[in-house]
Image (cartoon, rainbow, N blue to C red):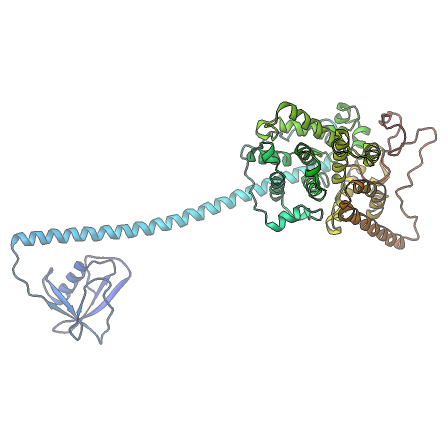
Length: 554
Protein backbone atom coordinates (compact mmCIF):
# COMPACT_ATOMS: atom_id res chain seq x y z
CA UNK A 1 0.00 0.00 0.00
CA UNK A 2 1.11 3.66 -0.40
CA UNK A 3 1.45 5.45 2.91
CA UNK A 4 1.37 9.25 2.78
CA UNK A 5 4.05 10.94 4.76
CA UNK A 6 5.15 14.41 5.66
CA UNK A 7 7.56 14.50 2.76
CA UNK A 8 6.57 15.05 -0.85
CA UNK A 9 8.16 15.18 -4.25
CA UNK A 10 9.27 12.99 -7.09
CA UNK A 11 10.64 10.58 -8.01
CA UNK A 12 9.28 8.09 -5.46
CA UNK A 13 11.05 5.03 -4.07
CA UNK A 14 9.19 1.91 -2.98
CA UNK A 15 10.61 -0.48 -0.36
CA UNK A 16 8.78 -3.63 0.83
CA UNK A 17 8.63 -4.25 4.60
CA UNK A 18 7.90 -7.34 6.74
CA UNK A 19 5.44 -7.09 9.66
CA UNK A 20 3.77 -9.75 11.85
CA UNK A 21 0.51 -10.14 9.88
CA UNK A 22 2.13 -9.76 6.47
CA UNK A 23 4.13 -7.58 4.11
CA UNK A 24 3.42 -3.90 3.64
CA UNK A 25 4.72 -1.66 0.80
CA UNK A 26 5.87 1.81 1.84
CA UNK A 27 6.54 4.54 -0.78
CA UNK A 28 8.46 7.70 0.04
CA UNK A 29 10.26 10.57 -1.72
CA UNK A 30 14.00 10.69 -2.17
CA UNK A 31 13.85 14.17 -0.58
CA UNK A 32 12.56 12.75 2.75
CA UNK A 33 14.90 12.80 5.72
CA UNK A 34 15.62 9.84 8.01
CA UNK A 35 13.12 10.97 10.68
CA UNK A 36 10.27 11.14 8.18
CA UNK A 37 11.08 7.69 6.83
CA UNK A 38 11.13 6.19 10.36
CA UNK A 39 7.70 7.76 11.02
CA UNK A 40 6.37 6.18 7.82
CA UNK A 41 7.65 2.79 8.91
CA UNK A 42 6.07 3.22 12.38
CA UNK A 43 2.68 4.13 10.89
CA UNK A 44 2.86 1.23 8.41
CA UNK A 45 3.62 -1.31 11.16
CA UNK A 46 1.12 0.13 13.67
CA UNK A 47 3.75 1.50 16.01
CA UNK A 48 3.43 4.94 17.63
CA UNK A 49 5.17 7.73 15.80
CA UNK A 50 8.66 8.63 17.02
CA UNK A 51 9.21 5.03 18.14
CA UNK A 52 12.84 4.10 17.84
CA UNK A 53 13.09 1.24 15.34
CA UNK A 54 15.74 -0.81 13.62
CA UNK A 55 15.64 -1.95 9.99
CA UNK A 56 17.05 -5.43 9.40
CA UNK A 57 17.62 -7.61 6.39
CA UNK A 58 16.45 -11.24 6.19
CA UNK A 59 19.73 -12.34 7.80
CA UNK A 60 19.40 -9.72 10.58
CA UNK A 61 21.95 -7.31 9.18
CA UNK A 62 21.15 -3.74 10.20
CA UNK A 63 20.30 -1.24 7.43
CA UNK A 64 20.76 2.53 7.77
CA UNK A 65 17.40 4.30 7.48
CA UNK A 66 17.89 7.12 4.95
CA UNK A 67 16.85 7.91 1.33
CA UNK A 68 19.98 6.22 -0.04
CA UNK A 69 19.35 2.82 1.57
CA UNK A 70 19.87 -0.14 -0.79
CA UNK A 71 16.87 -1.24 -2.84
CA UNK A 72 15.27 -4.59 -1.99
CA UNK A 73 12.71 -6.92 -3.54
CA UNK A 74 9.80 -9.12 -2.52
CA UNK A 75 12.22 -11.99 -1.95
CA UNK A 76 14.52 -9.92 0.23
CA UNK A 77 12.20 -7.96 2.50
CA UNK A 78 13.30 -5.72 5.31
CA UNK A 79 12.16 -6.30 8.91
CA UNK A 80 11.11 -3.48 11.23
CA UNK A 81 11.95 -4.05 14.85
CA UNK A 82 11.14 -1.64 17.72
CA UNK A 83 14.10 -0.78 19.90
CA UNK A 84 13.34 -0.86 23.64
CA UNK A 85 14.34 2.39 25.27
CA UNK A 86 14.34 3.62 28.78
CA UNK A 87 11.79 6.19 29.84
CA UNK A 88 13.11 9.62 29.04
CA UNK A 89 12.74 12.42 31.47
CA UNK A 90 10.73 15.44 30.50
CA UNK A 91 13.92 17.43 30.11
CA UNK A 92 15.53 14.82 27.89
CA UNK A 93 12.42 14.65 25.73
CA UNK A 94 12.50 18.42 25.34
CA UNK A 95 16.17 18.38 24.35
CA UNK A 96 15.55 15.53 21.93
CA UNK A 97 12.65 17.39 20.37
CA UNK A 98 14.73 20.53 19.95
CA UNK A 99 17.54 18.54 18.36
CA UNK A 100 15.08 16.90 16.00
CA UNK A 101 13.73 20.32 14.97
CA UNK A 102 17.27 21.62 14.46
CA UNK A 103 18.12 18.58 12.34
CA UNK A 104 14.99 19.09 10.28
CA UNK A 105 15.83 22.77 9.71
CA UNK A 106 19.38 21.87 8.61
CA UNK A 107 17.93 19.26 6.27
CA UNK A 108 15.59 21.79 4.70
CA UNK A 109 18.43 24.33 4.41
CA UNK A 110 20.60 21.85 2.53
CA UNK A 111 17.71 21.03 0.21
CA UNK A 112 17.20 24.75 -0.46
CA UNK A 113 20.90 25.14 -1.26
CA UNK A 114 20.74 22.26 -3.72
CA UNK A 115 17.62 23.70 -5.35
CA UNK A 116 19.19 27.15 -5.46
CA UNK A 117 22.33 25.77 -7.11
CA UNK A 118 20.26 23.91 -9.68
CA UNK A 119 18.12 26.95 -10.45
CA UNK A 120 21.22 29.16 -10.72
CA UNK A 121 22.80 26.72 -13.14
CA UNK A 122 19.68 26.68 -15.30
CA UNK A 123 19.50 30.49 -15.25
CA UNK A 124 23.14 30.70 -16.34
CA UNK A 125 22.45 28.42 -19.29
CA UNK A 126 19.42 30.50 -20.26
CA UNK A 127 21.38 33.76 -19.98
CA UNK A 128 24.08 32.39 -22.26
CA UNK A 129 21.51 31.31 -24.80
CA UNK A 130 19.88 34.76 -24.65
CA UNK A 131 23.30 36.40 -25.11
CA UNK A 132 24.12 34.24 -28.14
CA UNK A 133 20.73 34.91 -29.68
CA UNK A 134 21.17 38.65 -29.07
CA UNK A 135 24.58 38.61 -30.81
CA UNK A 136 23.05 36.78 -33.75
CA UNK A 137 20.31 39.38 -33.93
CA UNK A 138 22.91 42.17 -33.98
CA UNK A 139 24.84 40.44 -36.78
CA UNK A 140 21.65 39.95 -38.76
CA UNK A 141 20.76 43.62 -38.40
CA UNK A 142 24.28 44.60 -39.47
CA UNK A 143 24.00 42.39 -42.55
CA UNK A 144 20.62 43.92 -43.37
CA UNK A 145 22.10 47.41 -43.04
CA UNK A 146 25.04 46.51 -45.30
CA UNK A 147 22.72 44.99 -47.90
CA UNK A 148 20.47 48.05 -47.79
CA UNK A 149 23.46 50.36 -48.23
CA UNK A 150 24.73 48.31 -51.18
CA UNK A 151 21.30 48.42 -52.82
CA UNK A 152 21.15 52.18 -52.36
CA UNK A 153 24.61 52.51 -53.88
CA UNK A 154 23.63 50.36 -56.86
CA UNK A 155 20.46 52.37 -57.32
CA UNK A 156 22.43 55.59 -57.15
CA UNK A 157 24.89 54.29 -59.74
CA UNK A 158 22.15 53.20 -62.12
CA UNK A 159 20.41 56.58 -61.93
CA UNK A 160 23.56 58.71 -61.89
CA UNK A 161 24.00 61.00 -64.87
CA UNK A 162 27.26 62.58 -63.78
CA UNK A 163 30.39 61.64 -61.91
CA UNK A 164 29.98 61.68 -58.12
CA UNK A 165 32.67 64.35 -57.98
CA UNK A 166 31.11 66.61 -60.59
CA UNK A 167 29.31 68.76 -58.06
CA UNK A 168 30.95 67.74 -54.79
CA UNK A 169 34.57 66.91 -54.19
CA UNK A 170 33.73 64.74 -51.20
CA UNK A 171 30.76 62.44 -50.70
CA UNK A 172 28.53 64.22 -48.17
CA UNK A 173 27.50 60.91 -46.60
CA UNK A 174 31.11 60.08 -45.83
CA UNK A 175 32.85 61.01 -42.61
CA UNK A 176 36.54 61.65 -42.20
CA UNK A 177 36.38 61.37 -38.44
CA UNK A 178 37.18 58.21 -36.49
CA UNK A 179 34.57 55.68 -35.50
CA UNK A 180 33.60 56.10 -31.87
CA UNK A 181 33.52 52.36 -31.23
CA UNK A 182 37.01 51.67 -32.54
CA UNK A 183 39.02 49.59 -32.35
CA UNK A 184 36.36 46.95 -32.79
CA UNK A 185 37.72 44.87 -35.65
CA UNK A 186 39.05 41.52 -34.46
CA UNK A 187 42.82 41.43 -34.06
CA UNK A 188 43.82 38.31 -35.96
CA UNK A 189 46.93 36.42 -34.93
CA UNK A 190 48.90 35.89 -38.14
CA UNK A 191 50.45 32.47 -38.53
CA UNK A 192 54.19 32.18 -39.30
CA UNK A 193 53.25 31.03 -42.83
CA UNK A 194 51.15 34.16 -43.37
CA UNK A 195 53.87 36.44 -42.00
CA UNK A 196 56.37 34.87 -44.41
CA UNK A 197 53.99 35.02 -47.41
CA UNK A 198 53.15 38.65 -46.67
CA UNK A 199 56.74 39.61 -47.49
CA UNK A 200 56.60 38.15 -51.00
CA UNK A 201 55.17 39.59 -54.26
CA UNK A 202 53.29 36.31 -54.83
CA UNK A 203 50.96 36.99 -51.87
CA UNK A 204 47.31 36.25 -52.81
CA UNK A 205 45.37 39.40 -51.91
CA UNK A 206 42.00 37.84 -52.80
CA UNK A 207 41.92 35.44 -49.84
CA UNK A 208 41.46 38.05 -47.13
CA UNK A 209 38.41 39.70 -45.61
CA UNK A 210 38.49 43.47 -44.83
CA UNK A 211 39.17 42.94 -41.12
CA UNK A 212 41.98 40.53 -41.96
CA UNK A 213 43.51 43.07 -44.35
CA UNK A 214 43.40 45.67 -41.54
CA UNK A 215 45.27 43.25 -39.27
CA UNK A 216 47.87 42.60 -41.99
CA UNK A 217 48.43 46.35 -42.47
CA UNK A 218 48.80 46.80 -38.73
CA UNK A 219 51.34 43.97 -38.68
CA UNK A 220 53.37 45.66 -41.44
CA UNK A 221 53.76 48.85 -39.38
CA UNK A 222 54.73 46.81 -36.33
CA UNK A 223 57.12 44.56 -38.24
CA UNK A 224 58.96 47.44 -39.95
CA UNK A 225 59.53 49.13 -36.59
CA UNK A 226 57.45 52.19 -37.54
CA UNK A 227 55.23 51.94 -34.45
CA UNK A 228 58.30 51.85 -32.23
CA UNK A 229 60.45 54.45 -33.99
CA UNK A 230 57.69 57.07 -34.41
CA UNK A 231 55.83 56.46 -31.13
CA UNK A 232 52.60 55.46 -32.85
CA UNK A 233 49.98 54.37 -30.34
CA UNK A 234 48.57 50.96 -31.43
CA UNK A 235 44.97 52.11 -30.86
CA UNK A 236 45.57 55.26 -32.92
CA UNK A 237 47.02 53.10 -35.70
CA UNK A 238 43.88 50.95 -35.74
CA UNK A 239 41.59 53.98 -35.74
CA UNK A 240 43.52 55.49 -38.62
CA UNK A 241 43.40 52.26 -40.66
CA UNK A 242 39.65 51.91 -40.12
CA UNK A 243 39.03 55.54 -41.08
CA UNK A 244 41.12 55.06 -44.24
CA UNK A 245 39.10 51.96 -45.07
CA UNK A 246 35.84 53.91 -44.62
CA UNK A 247 37.03 56.52 -47.12
CA UNK A 248 37.69 54.11 -49.97
CA UNK A 249 34.62 53.78 -52.18
CA UNK A 250 33.12 50.53 -53.42
CA UNK A 251 34.53 50.86 -56.94
CA UNK A 252 35.28 47.88 -59.14
CA UNK A 253 39.01 48.55 -59.07
CA UNK A 254 39.96 51.60 -57.01
CA UNK A 255 38.78 50.25 -53.67
CA UNK A 256 40.26 49.27 -50.29
CA UNK A 257 41.51 45.91 -51.61
CA UNK A 258 43.52 47.80 -54.25
CA UNK A 259 44.94 49.94 -51.43
CA UNK A 260 45.93 46.75 -49.56
CA UNK A 261 47.38 45.25 -52.74
CA UNK A 262 49.61 48.27 -53.40
CA UNK A 263 50.73 48.49 -49.77
CA UNK A 264 51.54 44.78 -49.57
CA UNK A 265 53.67 45.08 -52.72
CA UNK A 266 55.50 48.03 -51.17
CA UNK A 267 56.04 45.97 -48.00
CA UNK A 268 57.47 43.11 -50.08
CA UNK A 269 59.76 45.52 -51.97
CA UNK A 270 61.16 46.73 -48.64
CA UNK A 271 62.28 43.15 -47.90
CA UNK A 272 63.19 42.07 -51.44
CA UNK A 273 65.37 45.12 -52.06
CA UNK A 274 66.60 45.56 -48.47
CA UNK A 275 65.32 49.14 -48.46
CA UNK A 276 65.70 49.56 -44.70
CA UNK A 277 69.46 49.29 -45.23
CA UNK A 278 69.40 51.94 -47.98
CA UNK A 279 66.73 54.41 -46.84
CA UNK A 280 65.86 56.05 -43.53
CA UNK A 281 62.90 54.98 -41.39
CA UNK A 282 61.26 58.31 -42.28
CA UNK A 283 61.47 57.30 -45.95
CA UNK A 284 59.93 53.88 -45.17
CA UNK A 285 57.10 55.55 -43.22
CA UNK A 286 56.45 57.89 -46.17
CA UNK A 287 56.39 54.98 -48.65
CA UNK A 288 54.01 52.83 -46.58
CA UNK A 289 51.66 55.67 -45.62
CA UNK A 290 51.52 57.03 -49.18
CA UNK A 291 50.74 53.54 -50.49
CA UNK A 292 47.81 53.21 -48.09
CA UNK A 293 46.43 56.69 -48.88
CA UNK A 294 47.27 56.96 -52.58
CA UNK A 295 43.69 56.47 -53.91
CA UNK A 296 41.55 57.74 -51.01
CA UNK A 297 37.97 58.63 -52.02
CA UNK A 298 38.62 57.74 -55.68
CA UNK A 299 35.30 58.26 -57.51
CA UNK A 300 35.94 55.57 -60.15
CA UNK A 301 36.31 58.14 -62.97
CA UNK A 302 39.86 59.11 -63.97
CA UNK A 303 41.55 62.47 -64.47
CA UNK A 304 40.64 62.58 -68.15
CA UNK A 305 36.96 62.49 -67.25
CA UNK A 306 37.42 65.05 -64.45
CA UNK A 307 39.02 67.52 -66.89
CA UNK A 308 36.70 66.89 -69.83
CA UNK A 309 33.55 67.02 -67.66
CA UNK A 310 34.90 70.10 -65.84
CA UNK A 311 34.08 68.60 -62.45
CA UNK A 312 34.53 70.43 -59.18
CA UNK A 313 37.79 68.57 -58.57
CA UNK A 314 39.19 69.68 -61.92
CA UNK A 315 38.15 73.27 -61.25
CA UNK A 316 39.54 73.20 -57.71
CA UNK A 317 42.96 71.90 -58.77
CA UNK A 318 43.16 73.71 -62.13
CA UNK A 319 43.17 70.46 -64.16
CA UNK A 320 46.53 69.51 -62.60
CA UNK A 321 46.29 65.95 -61.25
CA UNK A 322 42.87 66.60 -59.71
CA UNK A 323 42.42 63.09 -58.32
CA UNK A 324 45.90 62.79 -56.85
CA UNK A 325 45.57 66.20 -55.21
CA UNK A 326 42.23 65.11 -53.80
CA UNK A 327 43.72 61.88 -52.44
CA UNK A 328 46.39 63.93 -50.62
CA UNK A 329 43.82 66.34 -49.20
CA UNK A 330 41.63 63.54 -47.87
CA UNK A 331 44.67 61.77 -46.38
CA UNK A 332 45.70 64.80 -44.35
CA UNK A 333 42.14 65.63 -43.36
CA UNK A 334 42.04 62.18 -41.76
CA UNK A 335 45.41 62.73 -40.08
CA UNK A 336 44.12 66.07 -38.76
CA UNK A 337 41.74 64.11 -36.51
CA UNK A 338 43.53 63.69 -33.13
CA UNK A 339 42.21 60.13 -32.71
CA UNK A 340 43.64 59.15 -36.12
CA UNK A 341 46.91 61.08 -36.18
CA UNK A 342 49.64 58.45 -36.39
CA UNK A 343 52.14 61.28 -36.95
CA UNK A 344 51.35 63.05 -33.68
CA UNK A 345 54.65 61.91 -32.13
CA UNK A 346 56.79 63.70 -34.73
CA UNK A 347 58.52 66.99 -34.12
CA UNK A 348 57.25 69.87 -36.35
CA UNK A 349 60.25 69.70 -38.69
CA UNK A 350 59.99 65.93 -39.16
CA UNK A 351 56.23 66.26 -39.70
CA UNK A 352 56.88 68.83 -42.43
CA UNK A 353 59.32 66.40 -44.09
CA UNK A 354 56.98 63.42 -43.93
CA UNK A 355 54.02 65.48 -45.16
CA UNK A 356 55.99 66.74 -48.16
CA UNK A 357 57.23 63.21 -48.85
CA UNK A 358 53.74 61.69 -48.80
CA UNK A 359 52.36 64.43 -51.08
CA UNK A 360 55.23 63.97 -53.54
CA UNK A 361 54.69 60.21 -53.70
CA UNK A 362 50.91 60.34 -54.14
CA UNK A 363 51.20 62.98 -56.89
CA UNK A 364 53.74 60.73 -58.64
CA UNK A 365 51.02 58.10 -59.21
CA UNK A 366 49.42 60.32 -61.88
CA UNK A 367 50.25 58.42 -65.07
CA UNK A 368 50.29 61.71 -67.00
CA UNK A 369 53.70 62.28 -65.36
CA UNK A 370 55.02 58.80 -66.17
CA UNK A 371 57.40 59.83 -68.96
CA UNK A 372 58.80 62.75 -67.00
CA UNK A 373 59.53 60.64 -63.89
CA UNK A 374 60.96 57.73 -65.88
CA UNK A 375 63.40 59.92 -67.78
CA UNK A 376 64.62 61.56 -64.59
CA UNK A 377 65.09 58.20 -62.87
CA UNK A 378 66.97 56.67 -65.83
CA UNK A 379 69.34 59.64 -65.82
CA UNK A 380 69.99 59.15 -62.09
CA UNK A 381 70.43 55.35 -62.11
CA UNK A 382 73.90 55.33 -63.71
CA UNK A 383 75.41 57.39 -60.89
CA UNK A 384 72.84 56.73 -58.21
CA UNK A 385 73.82 57.99 -54.77
CA UNK A 386 71.70 56.97 -51.78
CA UNK A 387 73.04 59.95 -49.84
CA UNK A 388 71.62 62.29 -52.51
CA UNK A 389 68.14 63.43 -51.42
CA UNK A 390 67.01 64.09 -55.00
CA UNK A 391 68.04 60.57 -56.05
CA UNK A 392 66.24 59.03 -53.07
CA UNK A 393 63.09 60.99 -53.91
CA UNK A 394 63.17 59.75 -57.52
CA UNK A 395 63.61 56.19 -56.28
CA UNK A 396 60.64 56.47 -53.93
CA UNK A 397 58.50 57.91 -56.73
CA UNK A 398 59.38 55.01 -59.01
CA UNK A 399 58.78 52.48 -56.23
CA UNK A 400 55.24 53.70 -55.51
CA UNK A 401 54.52 53.79 -59.24
CA UNK A 402 55.72 50.19 -59.55
CA UNK A 403 53.52 49.10 -56.65
CA UNK A 404 50.47 50.99 -57.95
CA UNK A 405 50.46 49.06 -61.25
CA UNK A 406 52.17 45.85 -60.11
CA UNK A 407 49.29 43.38 -60.44
CA UNK A 408 50.93 41.49 -63.31
CA UNK A 409 53.93 40.78 -61.08
CA UNK A 410 51.70 38.41 -59.12
CA UNK A 411 50.72 34.87 -60.23
CA UNK A 412 48.19 34.75 -63.12
CA UNK A 413 45.34 33.53 -60.91
CA UNK A 414 45.84 36.60 -58.70
CA UNK A 415 46.59 39.13 -61.45
CA UNK A 416 43.91 38.40 -64.05
CA UNK A 417 40.87 39.20 -61.85
CA UNK A 418 42.34 42.68 -61.39
CA UNK A 419 42.28 43.18 -65.18
CA UNK A 420 38.58 42.32 -65.20
CA UNK A 421 37.95 44.78 -62.36
CA UNK A 422 39.87 47.55 -64.14
CA UNK A 423 38.08 46.99 -67.45
CA UNK A 424 34.73 47.04 -65.67
CA UNK A 425 35.59 50.44 -64.18
CA UNK A 426 36.82 51.68 -67.57
CA UNK A 427 33.65 50.54 -69.30
CA UNK A 428 31.51 52.28 -66.69
CA UNK A 429 33.39 55.51 -67.37
CA UNK A 430 33.27 55.19 -71.17
CA UNK A 431 29.52 54.50 -71.05
CA UNK A 432 29.12 57.67 -68.98
CA UNK A 433 31.28 59.64 -71.39
CA UNK A 434 29.18 58.49 -74.34
CA UNK A 435 26.02 59.48 -72.50
CA UNK A 436 27.41 62.95 -71.76
CA UNK A 437 28.89 63.43 -75.23
CA UNK A 438 32.49 63.45 -74.00
CA UNK A 439 35.51 61.95 -75.83
CA UNK A 440 36.09 58.24 -75.16
CA UNK A 441 39.58 56.75 -75.02
CA UNK A 442 39.83 53.64 -77.27
CA UNK A 443 41.39 51.51 -74.53
CA UNK A 444 38.34 52.17 -72.33
CA UNK A 445 35.66 51.45 -74.93
CA UNK A 446 33.97 48.10 -74.38
CA UNK A 447 33.41 47.83 -78.14
CA UNK A 448 37.09 48.21 -79.03
CA UNK A 449 39.22 46.54 -76.36
CA UNK A 450 39.76 43.03 -75.02
CA UNK A 451 41.70 41.78 -72.05
CA UNK A 452 44.64 40.68 -74.21
CA UNK A 453 44.92 43.88 -76.22
CA UNK A 454 44.52 45.94 -73.05
CA UNK A 455 47.48 44.31 -71.32
CA UNK A 456 50.03 43.71 -74.08
CA UNK A 457 50.71 47.38 -74.79
CA UNK A 458 50.67 48.25 -71.10
CA UNK A 459 53.20 45.52 -70.28
CA UNK A 460 55.44 46.30 -73.25
CA UNK A 461 55.57 50.09 -72.96
CA UNK A 462 55.03 50.80 -69.26
CA UNK A 463 55.53 47.94 -66.81
CA UNK A 464 58.51 46.12 -68.27
CA UNK A 465 60.63 49.25 -68.99
CA UNK A 466 59.93 50.63 -65.50
CA UNK A 467 60.86 47.41 -63.70
CA UNK A 468 63.94 47.05 -65.93
CA UNK A 469 65.07 50.47 -64.69
CA UNK A 470 64.58 49.37 -61.07
CA UNK A 471 66.46 46.13 -61.80
CA UNK A 472 69.56 48.16 -62.73
CA UNK A 473 69.61 49.43 -59.15
CA UNK A 474 68.35 46.25 -57.45
CA UNK A 475 69.29 43.17 -59.55
CA UNK A 476 67.15 40.87 -57.38
CA UNK A 477 64.04 42.53 -58.86
CA UNK A 478 64.85 40.95 -62.22
CA UNK A 479 64.22 37.42 -61.01
CA UNK A 480 61.42 38.13 -58.55
CA UNK A 481 59.37 40.72 -60.45
CA UNK A 482 60.62 41.31 -63.99
CA UNK A 483 60.54 37.64 -64.96
CA UNK A 484 56.79 37.29 -64.16
CA UNK A 485 56.11 40.38 -66.32
CA UNK A 486 57.77 38.80 -69.36
CA UNK A 487 55.76 35.62 -68.73
CA UNK A 488 52.55 37.67 -68.50
CA UNK A 489 53.33 39.43 -71.79
CA UNK A 490 53.88 36.06 -73.52
CA UNK A 491 50.63 34.75 -72.02
CA UNK A 492 48.57 37.70 -73.28
CA UNK A 493 50.17 37.55 -76.71
CA UNK A 494 49.18 33.89 -76.93
CA UNK A 495 45.66 34.87 -75.84
CA UNK A 496 45.52 37.54 -78.55
CA UNK A 497 46.65 35.05 -81.20
CA UNK A 498 43.82 32.76 -80.09
CA UNK A 499 41.36 35.64 -80.30
CA UNK A 500 42.64 36.59 -83.74
CA UNK A 501 42.29 33.00 -84.93
CA UNK A 502 38.64 32.99 -83.84
CA UNK A 503 37.95 36.31 -85.55
CA UNK A 504 40.18 35.99 -88.64
CA UNK A 505 37.40 37.27 -90.90
CA UNK A 506 37.25 40.53 -88.95
CA UNK A 507 39.81 43.28 -88.62
CA UNK A 508 41.79 42.65 -85.41
CA UNK A 509 41.74 45.23 -82.65
CA UNK A 510 44.97 47.07 -81.86
CA UNK A 511 45.68 49.59 -79.18
CA UNK A 512 48.34 51.43 -81.10
CA UNK A 513 46.02 52.62 -83.91
CA UNK A 514 44.32 55.67 -82.46
CA UNK A 515 41.51 57.45 -84.35
CA UNK A 516 42.96 60.04 -86.69
CA UNK A 517 42.04 63.53 -85.50
CA UNK A 518 40.91 66.31 -87.76
CA UNK A 519 43.88 67.93 -89.55
CA UNK A 520 42.74 71.33 -88.33
CA UNK A 521 43.09 70.28 -84.70
CA UNK A 522 46.33 69.59 -82.78
CA UNK A 523 47.14 65.94 -82.14
CA UNK A 524 47.40 64.75 -78.53
CA UNK A 525 50.92 64.19 -77.26
CA UNK A 526 52.15 60.82 -76.13
CA UNK A 527 53.91 60.48 -72.82
CA UNK A 528 57.57 61.40 -73.12
CA UNK A 529 57.00 63.67 -76.16
CA UNK A 530 57.10 67.44 -76.18
CA UNK A 531 58.06 69.79 -73.38
CA UNK A 532 57.52 68.06 -70.00
CA UNK A 533 56.73 71.41 -68.43
CA UNK A 534 54.06 72.27 -71.00
CA UNK A 535 50.52 72.29 -69.61
CA UNK A 536 48.77 69.23 -71.06
CA UNK A 537 45.22 70.39 -70.32
CA UNK A 538 43.05 70.65 -73.47
CA UNK A 539 41.47 73.82 -74.69
CA UNK A 540 37.66 73.94 -74.44
CA UNK A 541 37.34 73.70 -78.22
CA UNK A 542 39.66 70.71 -78.62
CA UNK A 543 38.29 67.17 -78.04
CA UNK A 544 40.54 65.67 -75.37
CA UNK A 545 41.64 62.13 -76.18
CA UNK A 546 43.87 61.68 -73.14
CA UNK A 547 47.62 61.53 -72.75
CA UNK A 548 47.96 57.74 -72.71
CA UNK A 549 48.16 55.37 -75.64
CA UNK A 550 48.14 52.25 -73.46
CA UNK A 551 45.24 51.04 -71.36
CA UNK A 552 45.96 52.23 -67.87
CA UNK A 553 45.34 55.42 -65.95
CA UNK A 554 44.86 54.87 -62.22
